[in-house]
Image (cartoon, rainbow, N blue to C red; front, side):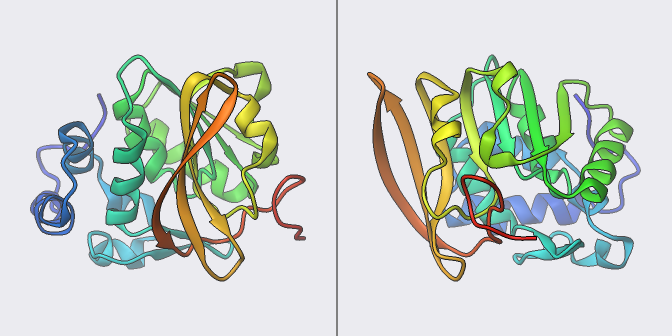
Amino acid sequence: MAGASQADPYRMRRLAMVEVQLRARGIRDERVLAAMAQVPRHLFVPPEHHDDAYGDFPLPIGEGQTISQPYVVAAMLEALALRPEDVVLEIGTGSGYQTALLAELAREVYSIERQPRLAMRAEEALLRLGYTNVHVRVGDGTLGWPEAAPFEAIIVAAAAPQVPPSLFDQLREGARMIVPVGSTFAQELQLIRKQSGGTFVTHLDGCRFVPLIGREGFSGS
């Protein structure tokens, strides 16, 4: 699908990121590794941060938001175990980088962003790179995208005080969701599976994300 051109000056940095930060630290899903070797992360951060785009740390993207460090993104995607035929909901488009990775891994991606400027910039970047299987809109991510449900997978890129009920309801039976759950200061990644209508939780690593603002998340302006 979309990706970097042959003249991409950051290609070697991206490949080094995959080998040193991801594979060497235990990421084993070859589809995730291939997607992260393909998608030009530097094109999803402000120009002044291009040279830092492949470092093992988050970066500011404006509107008080950040792009997560590559390892965290890879770990979340690996936990979701996406299949090429999946339809995925992303909560928190942000820069659009994770959206592009989802577009490489799944059939169709629906992504919701609370900040209009971020949504606009992300959509422009995704279109420039040729992604046609992505839908972005501005709204309250905690309420999901009911008219496009049910989803095979949901990925939440902000911390929730608990699993938003609306998102769980929009999972297909047997589907999974990954979401950081906790306070605004510290959270735990949780992999949620919907089985026989019930919730089955796998507790993953500790993490630190910006808060998920919305009706079923944290309150905020």
